[in-house]
Amino acid sequence: MKFIVDLPLAGLAKWLRFCGFDAAVQRLSPGAPQDLPPALADTYLLTRQQDFTRFKREDLLVLSAPDPEGQLQEVIRRLEITRGHLRLLSRCGQCNEILVSISRDQALGLVPEHVFHTQEQFHQCPKCRQVFWPGSHLPGILAKVLEKLD
Ligand SMILES: [Zn+2]
Image 1 (cartoon, rainbow, N blue to C red):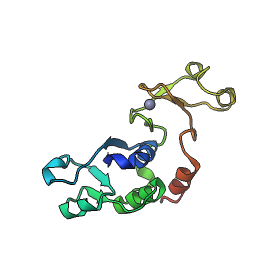
Image 2: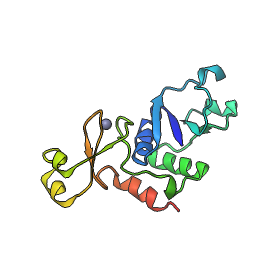
Image 3: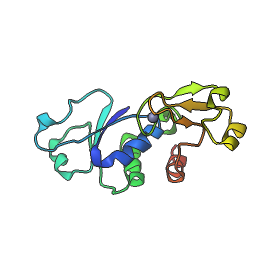
Image 4: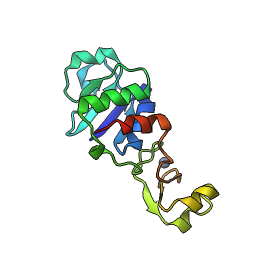
């Protein structure tokens, strides 16, 4: 499952990436149908612009929640996303790049000392070089949303 997320929903895009989904951010214009990205298999367009409801495209989700938490819950409900769809710690929230696994030695100096001593698994974004470890990337509020998944 992939997403093209309207620019004002960049916060939601970050959360989708934390969940492991490919989420590109792009400004979507409701001017005319031909201005929208073409429909692609397993790819959904996400926006909050109510003007989009007239397009009647099955891949277009017009969300109503004002905050990323509510928006993610709408996406989860409407696309019937389950725990099995998630790939936590697989994608950089900032860059949308796939993380690569690095050794503990490689993480030395790149993570806080207590993290280095307590964690075994480290992943790095090939673009921004940020290092992640289990739980590091999940804001508490997102973890709560995911806890409720089947
Ligand atoms: Zn990155």
